[in-house]
Length: 333
Image (cartoon, rainbow, N blue to C red; front, side):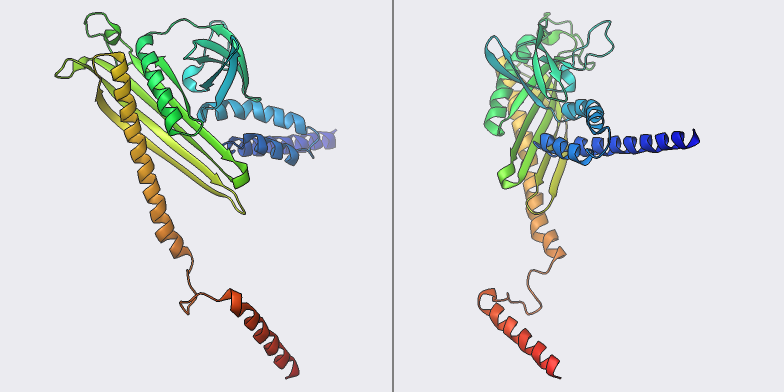
């Protein structure tokens, strides 16, 4: 009996270790390569008696977090039309009386609640949601953001949510949308591209929060909005190697004065986002150029001590001949 219990414990430890390793590998999958990583991990654990069970357990544990953190794009059909949106923490739908509805997400553009399978990354329309607060502002910002994402990023898309904001409060104004408490809009932008034939992939993510401040107005009487956000870049190059770049940037709150109208306000907000993201990209590009020009050169000598390149086309044969002659002379001695 003792031997049987020990064998069971060893097998359990081996399985737990396999689950932990599989979760780490899948959770750290590079952009656009999650399916390949899952396939490779499945082969790694295939020797285990419960290989399929290990993968299933790992996917249940890792994929919800992976999809939410990386703003996985989802698509579904509604009335014969295709729709794209992002899986983000802001889109999680909860229901009263149910322990967890983390597989139900809101597409804010169509107000459709969608059932999403985290492991397979497939979804289907589930139900229609009610119109959120501040829909006119949200809709105007969404149109401008979707246009910006499509024009700026390859395969770029976005989801724009109307969310409560504890920093907003009623100003006792005319009762319009901007004077309501909690006028906040969250913008999520994602772009993921993978070029397996060229051995590289990359992902851009950004999240912005727009908080309307009905109490603060410009000289022209326009209401102001506070804008803050964060962006991240993850690139992977794997031709004859494994080179990764990960970078993040937090953008501190700034005041963006809106024009008198939701459309003009949306354009002002998107311009501020565009300016901030472009500046970040330019600074990142400059840092990479400096890294290539200085740090890489410090890691290796560009030229031999003779300060001249070796003439491989003509010199290789001569060098081989000299080495052969030297070996022959050494053997005779």
